Image (cartoon, rainbow, N blue to C red; front, side, top):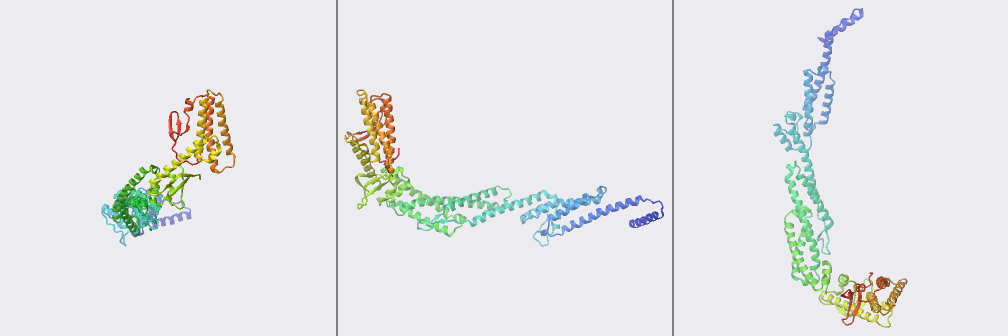
Length: 579
């Protein structure tokens, strides 16, 4: 009817305009036309929105594209805003806006619910809350089936369930990562002597323990996560498995190290004969160790091998206990040897075990002599009489013939004691000869140094200085020039020694003469101070406080005196060392 009226209006308007008549206004008609135009816009959008939203309901849930729906709803909202203000109070506009806003508010929930993290347990939980069944696995399950549920009324609960699903998916992925990693981790072995692969490879096993600690940290964080409920039992199970595996591997390595240490002692060697009971105990331990390593080769997966059954958990503590008993007996045995030859206290347990374990061959001691002597590096054995020791040599290559040969037979601690005594006797004998030589009227200083070992040469120059200084002090009151003359004699001796160092010397001789210079510089400085202080008595404290060297023929001892205290020279062979 309005179209008919509007056509008639156009005809009349054109006629009036053609004949030049006044144009008649129809304000009511214009108002109605404007209102109808607005209604057409509103209802056009309304129909478009209704058709689209109703179309969403028929989309299969598996094909829902929430991003596309969001974009279309955003476009509808923008078009709605652009409608004239005049119609924003109309009921149709209010219905349209509510339809768009309601679906738009539902969209974030749909997006959360469409997440791949949603499992059947989450849909079952949603069904309990909304009292609506969700058969999401059905082929004809549509968005309509979800929209029929009171989603907005239960918005917070639904959000919590969907967020929990995402968090649980993350927990499940991390747990799966740990499980997969330890399903693939295998023990690695290394060979031991010529007995096969009887050891856990140290570096690889340390890395395995480190990886286990990392995995336990991951599992610890999962245990404290409030969304872990569906996986809590699995997480706890793996925490127990890895914790137990770590303990077992650590025990395994302790047992392995102790087994290696004691295997060298009790499998062959002389110590096994000395400790037959412990040797038998170790044989049983050795069999158990072989059993453990054979089983490990059969089950190489780290976790399965360690906690697949209780074999290792029960056997390793028992082996450790037995090994510690063997070690305790061995420690007691070594203690006895050290008490018999105290210098063994300065030798480490492994070195002492090597010495004792090879005691049947006296020549094996060569590698360990510096551990029990200050500077006896090697000894020379008789060419034919295998165990007869004839001389000793220092690091520097100086050789000193022993006064009496030593037979390296019997218990090693006994003949080492004999060797030590003979070394000291030899050094003492050489010192006695040197003490007599320096008092000989035909004494020549450099001939003396060339004739005696370097150690005795140093001691000789100290005895010469003590003798001459004491004689000068004793006669200082009666002979006014003796102190200066003696001081000059010491200076001349020093000059001669320094001059020797300018010559082409061997390394040994250079060390010897440089040491003599060092010693005599100190001695000459001391005496020079006594001269400057006008000391004229051997009883003066300035003299008595110095280190003074004597050889006492009555007691047959070399003595070092400081003030009123006397120390016996210990006759330890020290070779030719720098001072």
